[in-house]
Image 1 (tube, rainbow, N blue to C red):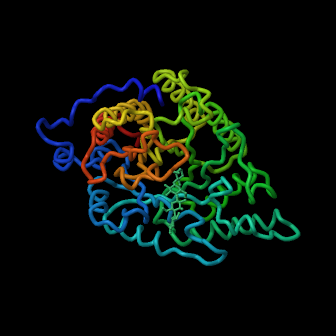
Image 2 (cartoon, protein in one colour):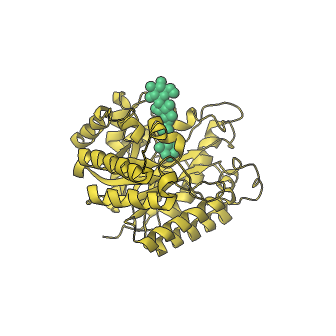
Image 3 (cartoon, rainbow, N blue to C red):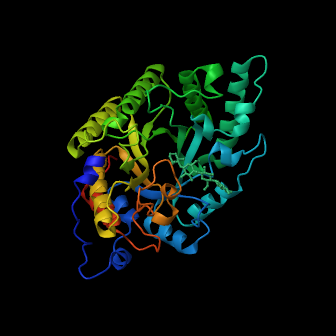
Length: 382
Ligand code: G3I
């Protein structure tokens, strides 16, 4: 989405003249209400780290703006079972109790993360015995059964499989579970187990493909995976669009610099979403934020560029009325994962500004872009 950022112009200030973004947001209709009127759930990830869940002011912001949350890390396999059989449900349970108390829904993220580095380290060391295929099946069943039975019907949507497609070549990633079973067989089994132990839940395949040229193989790989799962009758309900948008397209080897354009990227994205929905899959936005690493240091220009990129992306993506959930990956800049993700930092090393609120929890132009996109989107299907 580099093109969208490079072409950004200053957005008008929030609708209420004379008020700061913060004051206007306080006075404004909560994002969850704007969403709800159209049949959409709006929310965010909440993490235990970096002063989020433990911070009363941040919690109050989430309570005001959000109708649904997801745990940023606490429901991952590594978080729930850091050592074999040593379950640790406390942090996730605390978030769920808070969500229920405040009338917020919660979704589950995630049962299986396909990149080997994000599986619990003990899984890679596991001895699956003389019949490794059966050993892996038994471990997967135990994991899904334990986790899904623990949370029961409290979670109505699960990211069952996360990031199975390697963006470099579009092929399925291999890990300690796929090697004995086969990658597609392991993914198929994951969804069948989730369907068995969480039959009430929406079952989601979640990934971070984008519309730019650097993501072409990723998109193709995801489409091939979804087509194969459809052919097998695998119980997958929807594709989770992570939606980490913004300046990413120079990270894939720098090959695509200068070739990306806002309209071309959006057209590719529309083609992709049409193919996904054409196969009968639902959509949801699971992890939205805007990487600003190629935008100028000047805060007003940067925030305007972030808001403009978001508006373009959301106007298109929210135009699909089957998309029923829209979650951000953090509400305020200071707690964003991008601040500590060091593979491609801003060259000037300034803190990123990828979220709708700043570090002091003051609303930014991105908040208004999100509100405007939701006000303009069609009502969701019944
Ligand atoms: O909690 C420990 C802390 O005790 C320890 O001192 C510290 C030292 O590194 O690490 C802390 O854990 C970190 C955890 O975040 C909590 O902050 C892990 O190292 C770190 O790897 C972990 O990163 C998370 C990452 O997923 C990997 O699980 C990010 O917060 C989280 O935002 C990110 O989220 C992913 C989605 O799940 C999938 N899609 C992409 C998205 C962004 O990468």
